[in-house]
Image 1 (tube, one colour):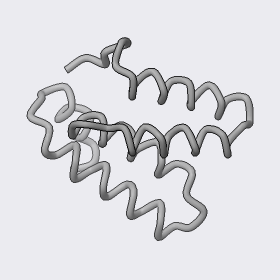
Image 2 (cartoon, one colour; image 1 turned 90 degrees about the vertical axis):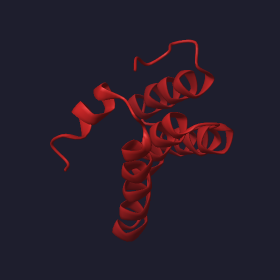
Image 3 (cartoon, helix red, strand yellow; image 1 turned 180 degrees about the vertical axis):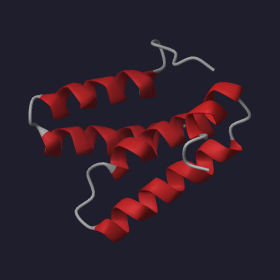
Image 4 (tube, one colour; image 1 turned 180 degrees about the horizontal axis):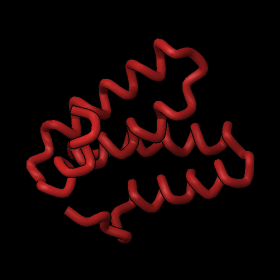
Length: 89
């Protein structure tokens, strides 16, 4: 699986990463939450959850989102995703 540059969730996550880099973390989180709400498949949800997790205020909330991302990633039947997860499992 390749990241599709035309995928709207991928586009918005890239925009959110740009906002992060500019120190605009609140706006980035809002964008990542928007991608979570717009996600239509496990790959999009996994990608969104990963970025939402990065902006949680508590360890418990971060862990919740990281677990969500991991569970979604494990459902994706793709060797590239499995390779990304190899250090985690």
